[in-house]
Length: 434
Ligand SMILES: [Zn+2]
Image 1 (cartoon, rainbow, N blue to C red):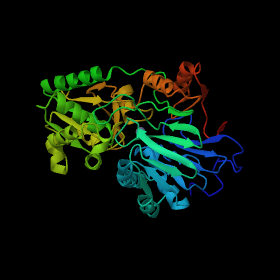
Image 2: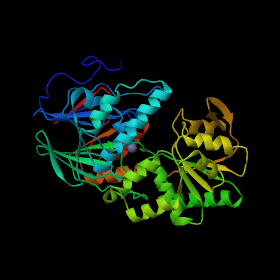
Image 3: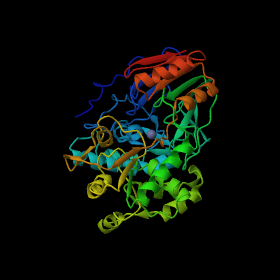
């Protein structure tokens, strides 16, 4: 058993005496694995996200205290992965956008499946998952709802469709929780805009890092694809099922509609759900067109046909399993082919090994892959400049930086501390703001 009620939680037992208390169960000083309890003197409290880090073995935030309400910012597993535990054990209501709620079942079932395949038991089971599906309260952007004595409303966070920033009016004190965010408009979602607040809880994944110009990077990507195709090769583009894959399809559809592009992976079901929520998609008609333009792989024979395509967009984005491995194994002997990585490759991931050693774990065996590997930065997180500009425009008194390793958090602090009080919490730490 991973959690034992009342034994493993770092959450303090004592009531809040004054101000607003922030306690990070996870996601402080690290990327992902998020869970933070916000509570005030009235006893009103909310849990912001409850995810897990899909490492091997997975990593979980500390046990959540008894809690009636959680806000789930978006459907990525490092923000939503432990919500079934919460509902199964505490009967918590989950608040989120219509799209996050609609995608949750796909995400949880996939997590459940992966954990059984990899042999790492989850802290929740299928009964908890079923309960969690029924625990959603969906909210539109801008709609006001209450949690205890607080008023809450959602704003577009950029990042992926359906991702929200939460504006919490805690009896006159305004908190803005960004969740994962981007102020830049990407193919499928419009960028976040600043919200005036007193306390800003800011994700800092890319603190200290500057993104290249988005348009130029997209052009560089398309050019590389065309080069590979013109020398007779297939470009394999590993991409996340929820966000990046759909971005890549839209970029290619717009810039090079003559290409034959195949899509394979869990993103097929995800995109179907996206298209049912057009109000949360940037130019939804263009998504629909691009999606019907690409060829979706549905069977083993489709997969074989895809080997003759120009481009294969497929999961997983960091080459930790998924159809991408099958394709690369089949395509790795022809040097005309190439692997085009679309983003950051985490330490310990297949993609990282490919970049560092030109090898990839294929069916459990470290295998040389001597293809062209080119990396692009099509990130859906704000970079340093966007984060700093956004934080300043929100003009808070306090900023709490989370979802960031120490270095990136310090880089943001250096550029923000002249205008606001900066807090960089650690997991298990409590911050009280008066
Ligand atoms: Zn995310």
